[in-house]
Length: 388
Ligand SMILES: Cc1ncc(COP(=O)(O)O)c(C=O)c1O
Image (tube, rainbow, N blue to C red; front, side, top):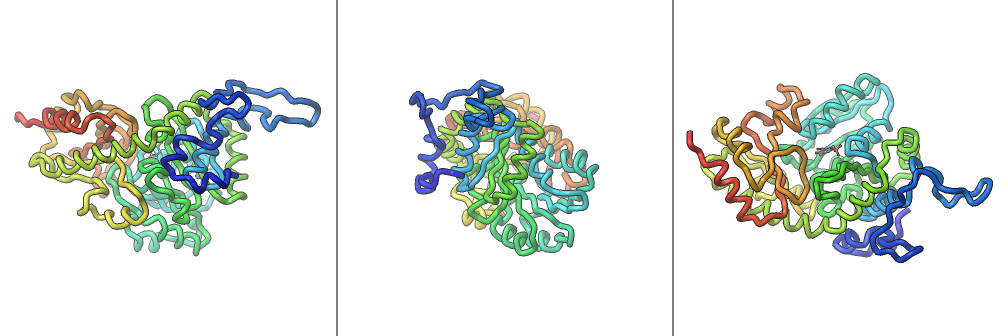
């Protein structure tokens, strides 16, 4: 359970100080890395509270309690990757269960559902969860959960977390939100009635493109027990050093995201006015379809932008010519990254779904970093200069 007094602090303070924040034994301000696989028992049937690091480790525990505190949730769990967190959430369900999933979502999530969990008797429907009618229409008697990504990856669609969670609850189903793009700094789905919230901690939470991590937070004690059982039985836990890297990264989550968002707004507007660009997908643009819902449920719009160019021939040139922006998969770090979703992050998604949602050969995704915004814009301007 989280320390109740944390609930009163502003998120800007919580990210800096974490759960305990320092080591009570030594006063070390940087929470120690407990690099130990096992822990000495004081006597027969006695424990310090730590027995073996697959079950619990003090550094991982500090991270788990910190992410729970940031999300105003009761329980937090840290895994070796975002996909391990997704996988754990899906293991809560049984053969025959049906799960409604945002059709626009990270390709790896689609892949694990279709290529792994379908074999175990789970059924998935991919729909546009930004459209509530579609969510209502897709609900079946065996629907056990609704899994949403909002903003979605890469088309930045916004799903109404509270409306979906309230509907799911009324039908006895769970709502799971992948909150990787906004993090608890900008959006706290548990406070909007979602049941489980998960993160690729690899992205904004870590923030430095140096660590893989996954996190899961929730309120229900019964579900927490099941998640803990899966976590300790499977052992896809986050290592002590990696837990420390995420804890350290999270201290600057607030200032990083503020700067990244400030840059993203400038870049999204610059792209919008660029005659070589066809469409810009950024939830912070007032003409974005999800702008009003985004404003209602989040305190920021984040720093992920997708855009399509008018001429497909530009794609290869842009990817080769960028110098400040790095052509690489992933997102959320201090460095600006550009990705070609069709061949990278979303290659696992079948063409008919990609065509339906708009992930085509003209679409690029930009993860805006903390660099000087003029340098990012000049880099794009130069890379996009069309020379036939
Ligand atoms: C939205 C989203 N969720 C989950 C994941 C998976 O996270 P990881 O790469 O840490 O396993 C990703 C990875 O790109 C992602 O973008």
